[in-house]
Length: 110
Image 1 (cartoon, rainbow, N blue to C red):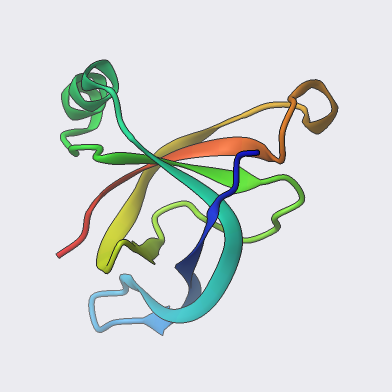
Image 2: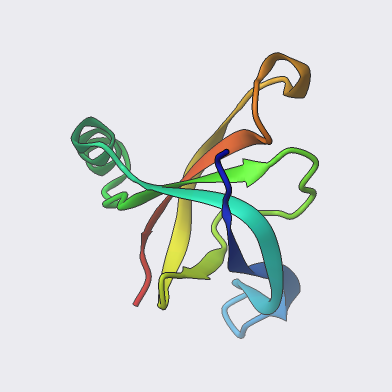
């Protein structure tokens, strides 16, 4: 049986703007259970780097029914911080076997 791991997601909430009228966000940590983590393939790493200039390191699969906002958020797992990049690959819950229906890529966050 495949089982995911808990990860800490830092959801971003718009809290205002700075003196240059750029958005300022506040991060709120939340633990999300049963997230699958797998290394990105060489093809995925190169494609993402060529398209976005960002180096994908891992893929994370999000459990069905999760309502958190993942785009551009920070995620902690394996004792390190990562940034969610790109858009998800998502399918119809009923047509996908298993407990996960979204796949995101993450890059190293420093």
